[in-house]
Structures are given as C-alpha cells and as structure tokens.
Image (cartoon, rainbow, N blue to C red; front, side, top):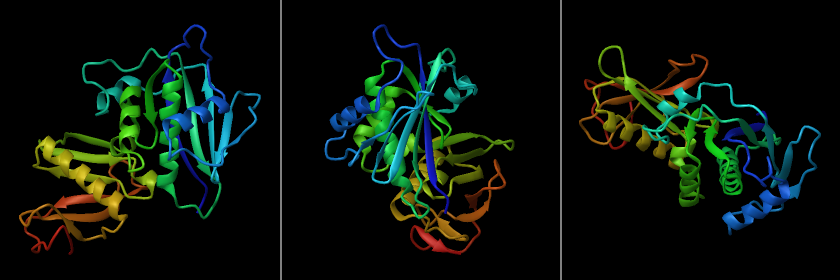
Length: 275
C-alpha cells in the first residue's frame, strides 16, 4: 500500500489589514489545542518553514503541510457551488477569491490504513484555520469535489467529531437522467477506503434518493465495506435493490457500489441479503 494523502483547499480574499497572509505552525498548534480539547493532535513536532512558504507539523506518524498561493483556484467555482448541498442556492460561487491555501495531511507509513484518522486530522486543521483566518470564503474538500461555507464546515466538524463528518467528507449528488427518472452518486467515500455509491436510474423522489445515499453511506461508515457484489439492500421487504461492484459511469477505472432496482428478484431478508 502506498502512502495516503488527503487534501483540502481554502479559498481566500486578500488578508484583512494587520492580519498575516498565512499562519505559522505555532499559531495553528495553539488553536488546535483550543478547538479540540481532549481530541487535539498529540506529540506535535513543528516543522521548519520552507523557502516557498510551506508550513508544517507532524503528529502521531502523520505530516500536516499548508502552502498559501497568491492566485485563485483555476477550477469552475460557480459550477461547484451550484452542485454542492453545503452551499446556499441563492449565494454566488466564490469566483472572485484572490488566493488559496492548499492543506495536506499525509502518512508515509506504507502499512497505514487509518484513512478515517487522516480525514479527522485534516478536518481539525481546516476547522482551526477557519477560526484563525477571516479571509477564508470557501472550503474545497478535494476528495468529495464539493464546496462548503467556512462557518458550515466548522459547525459540522465541532458537532460531529470524533464521529465521521458525513456531509463534509462526502458529496451527495442527485440529478435527472435522460429517461426522466433520477440518477445519483456519492463522491468522497473512496478516499476513506470505501466504495462510492452510484444509482444509474430510479423512480425515487429526490428526497428518497438522498435518504438512500445517506443511509447507505452511514452503514458503510459503521460497518466497513461489507456489502458484497450481489447483496440486496433496502429498508423494507418491498424493495429489491441489488448492489453490484461495477466500473463507475463517471470513471470506468474506478469500481463503485452500483444500486440496481430489481423488484422481480428474490425475496429480501433483513437490511442486507446475499443474492
């Protein structure tokens, strides 16, 4: 297994008068201790700033690095804002941000499998940086490819950790399909060692489809990747939803958990049934 890395980006306006453009490892370590009493990273060893301005610290075998870049993120922020369920529908995307900070958490231990621990550490760091920097206008959680308002990210993290921060770590996407039904998928589970979920087509309502994606995501968080190819999933005996391990419709090189409605299938027993 190769080293694991998780990345988030902080989109920023120019710094306020009298505020620094970035924050030192010392400042961040102090803020982490304030925000995460009883949960703060332990054994912090501060790194030496690089010539390019990268700050860092290490904790429990993980490295945390952040670099301020004096340029906006080149991706289409307006489109990301429209697709994000953690961005207000009546608010424009952060298209006018002037700079951004890349925040990275990595473990160089080839045997490390604690991906949820990496996500937790990255979440803590981003949450504390939000408290330190009032110029942050958006958080881009890269594994899920979605935008989150800074205040919403901080509120979710402080409320949920040490449990998984479901809605910050995972994007839940629902849209019409060409046949007039709905399609849906998650993004972000793969970075946590789980399969993302895709629903090619369903007669469900948008809310029912979202509830299905969220419920199954929570099940995977609680139980791990225990849903096998051919298992059926559902909340009642009337449902015949078969889970298949198939190439993603969005990226065929990635295997996802594809949910297929099979109402003519065998009778379901309980929440999960092997087909």
